[in-house]
Amino acid sequence: MGEVVVRFPPEASGFMHIGHAKAALLNYHYKETFDGKLILRFDDTNPEKESAVFEEAILADLPRLGVKWDSLSYTSNYFDRMIELCTKLISDGKAYADDTDLETMRKQREARQESACRNNSVERNLAMWKSMQEGTEQGLKTCIRAKIDMSSDNGAMRDPTIYRCKLEPHIRTGTKYK
Image 1 (cartoon, rainbow, N blue to C red):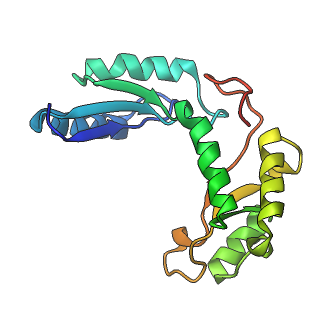
Image 2: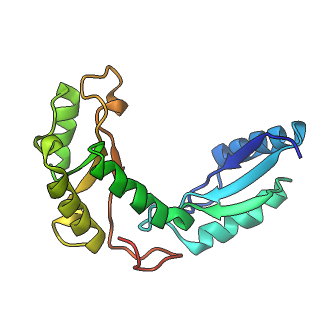
């Protein structure tokens, strides 16, 4: 097998559409051309929109397009690791918990202004992170943001949100994670 590894990462939030088909077929083409590997990885991080019906439909539709994958995985397989890494980022001062309301956060990003939460202590951020994982009312109003560069010309790099919590049960993990 070659060294090329490609992936097709659908969200199980709807039936396949032409954009999915294009991405799947292109990745399959590269897998075949370079004797590589295709990973089908469900990006199952939004329990509000996901459904087993959509997942089953995608699994049935890909072979109809002639697309064969070498392995199947789910982002949810890595939730424990994601929590560990998020905790490390907070502990290292590279991320922070922010309970600023969404509209204010948008305005601050546009104006390149730091959130008042950006300079919270590591201890405060870890406490807020814990409340997120517990699914408390305050925790559900909080997100984790990467400390990057609020002055960047690229708005996506202005302390992007990297973690949110939701109470909706997940189709694979139930209520274990928030």
